[in-house]
Amino acid sequence: MPLIENTLPVLLLWAVLGYLAGSIPFGIVLTRFLGLGNLREIGSGNIGATNVLRTGSKPAAIATLLLDAGKGAVILLIARAAAGEDAAQLAALTAMLGHCFPVWLRFKGGKGVATFLGILLALAWPAGLACCVVWLAAAAISRMSSVGGIASAAASSILVVVMGYGTTYLLCVALTVIVIWRHRENLQRLRAGTEPKIGQKG
Image (cartoon, rainbow, N blue to C red; front, side, top):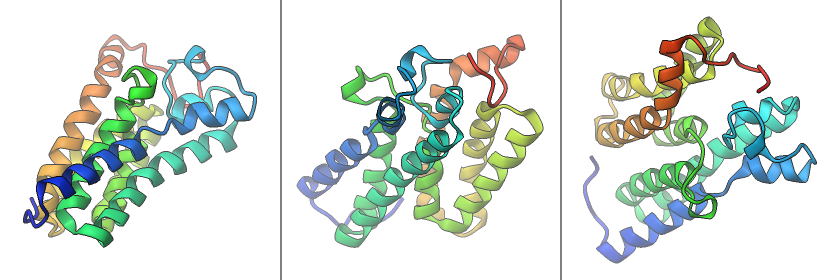
């Protein structure tokens, strides 16, 4: 973990800002704006890009993916520039929590994979790129977004250490735990053989 250089009030401020940034439900906002229906009543009911794809709109799904990734990356980079690495990693963690457990949606948010990858790219871009490759490979082989997300999260802690970003290890472990926890129902469906494929409509 990075050295703690900021005071508690400063860290609390960035924790709150990170949570607020992460809790913006871009999937719901975009589908409503584009008239694609209530995302909560489509497919899995999830607010992420994979479920947005089930509306039949690839542009909306891509936009959701980029925005969900971007909100994690942007708040980390702003916090890093303004207050340093300790604030940046804390803001990244709370952004992930905000996405997965947004107060506006009664703490029922997304699975966190796009936000996780955006955070990794901003945190340590070589490891982030490697995690994206892991996601693409696992998702392409399985044709399941959940498999890609779980695989990339599981690989992240190893990759950051191997690539020389050891101070990010604890954050990656925390993010991995969140991703796997949010995919617990997917894991049950994978064991049962009922997990939907990418693009499959619910």
